[in-house]
Image (cartoon, rainbow, N blue to C red; front, top):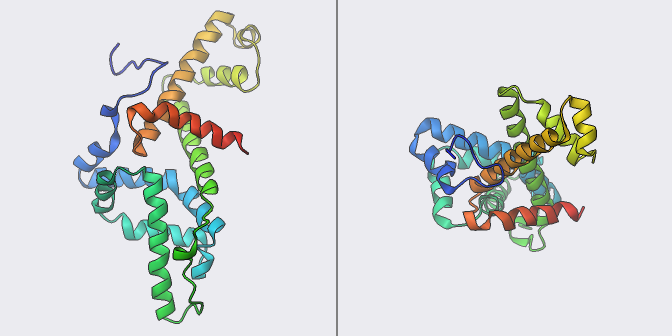
Length: 232
């Protein structure tokens, strides 16, 4: 099986890890890396800033804090290369980074007289609400994976397969019923759903690799994601 025809039941290998390719591509790669990072982590970081009170501690909206964080950190590859050397999952690196960014904001805004309290939320948020961040990150990963699969199927003129997958796995319709609705046999419905499930698993795995998860940890990471969602 060639790389252009991935095993529907498997996961992509680390040779598909995008960060090395992005870093090697210069400015165009930096733009791609930043686009991915902002699309995947903006909402989780904004939710985290609101839940922990980090944004309130500097008198700003969560979106303002996160936008400033991205602006100050993503001007070049130094921030991302430092992350890649750390061995830390990207979401943890960013969550720690937002604390440091708020600490810097507090010092600047206090110096300028824009805030009065001497409390530094970036240092005092010991009981930080990581759960909000993790849940939003999981939702972001799943939404991104679904969007990728839909784009892939539409590009190949097979968007009906997603609707078949949805009816079987989400609406819990048996393959016989799905097949009748789409003019195919139950066996063909099962094959289509299997292909889409494989595409979805590969897309999720690719996004986990972009977060710094290694091959051997992908399955356990997906199981942990399911637990996060099951808890709500």
